[in-house]
Length: 397
Figure 1 (tube, rainbow, N blue to C red):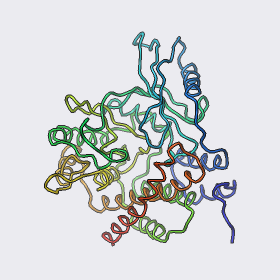
Figure 2: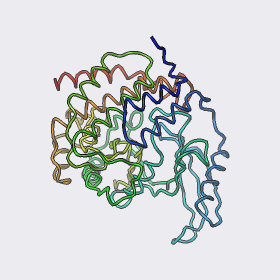
Figure 3: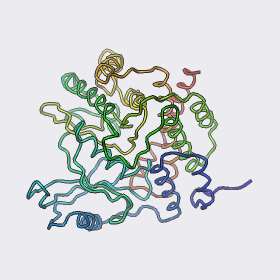
Figure 4: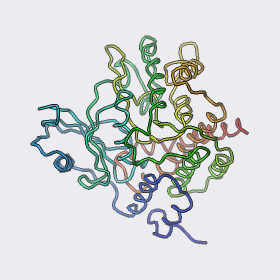
């Protein structure tokens, strides 16, 4: 029996993974790149000036005028990415002299979720005309100027939770005061509807493939996550094989693909605390052109919600699930299909187990990330995630 060394994958094995699990071209490129680099060095702390020098080189390649970078500092947040904030003193074309606060968002050596900075850049830029997002400026898609692939976007003002509110890791279990959630909830629903109604055909989304009507969207997604599981996991988990088979057997049909954020939830938007206005949607790295039920299933996950004082579950701590679906259907003009919604709940659970038990383990053990403590903590909840996944399968049997 052939033994596969997943820490030092051979070219033949990488080629076999690509052939066995066909998916979008850019996703395939990103997953192939990480395997080709896996045997290389792990993450090493980077000096701030290294990132500043890289950003200077990136800007100089795209901006012909004089500029200066000041106030560079590490930025917290962005659990899977390295982030640095800085101020750019420059003359912006068509605007004039500006002091613009910006953020560098860059990969570590290997991330718990490997995604494309080019896709993130293109999607944020396309969404600027639709919902509040930070402005995006430059993208180093292949790590030509910086140690790893990165993008530069504008700093967005706002908070993820009120000053006196507590929350868990990455915004989980945020409890919002009634006055705040009543103001945020209508915006939350309306923005999701606007994203799903975007005309992706009119935007520059060249890094995305558009699925054909039918089951291609679901198939690409399952292939993506099953490939990641096979490339990263160090143990055979029968439940994961059962769930992947279930997903393939029950793939939903998609008639009209739309833009999907893929991480639409509390903790991933900023709002101005004075008036509770959503000021920016963040973390578009998993976005795709696909099925809106993927967002709906993710957003309504119990992991991101909380109960009110009467014990009623609130979607993302904002509103009851029934009210959320009613408001979404009215705002979007789309109908929620319960079977497709359930399928994507299973799909999302499968992806989360893959990331925590598979990729999280691999990158923590190999020292590939700056977030080894967080990644190890996430590994600890994989048993709970698998139990939830099993319950979902049993409900859909």
